[in-house]
Image (cartoon, rainbow, N blue to C red; front, top):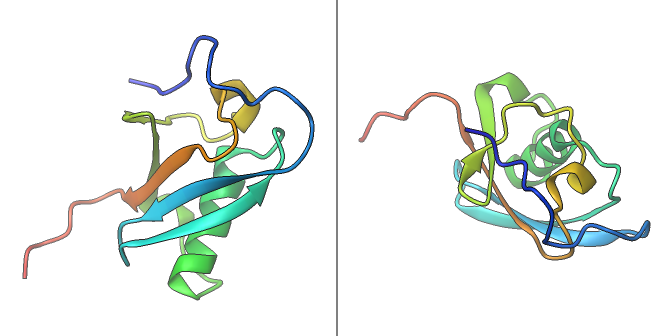
Length: 100
């Protein structure tokens, strides 16, 4: 299942705008200024770096969800997803974490 939406949701225009990204490893939400041409892979990399306060986070260990669906092709842009201002994303571990 992919989250690429058919129409609706904004993401038009060409200026910068903010999106919200919840990083579940730290239960922290970060606001990122993005362009419509920002890829999901870049969004994930920036969100992990800001939320985890580390530069060397292996991005392949994490998945991105948008509108409840997994974004399988992270090379798509936010415009392709129709993700407009204040759009919510979730970055979560690719593998389930054991309960402690």
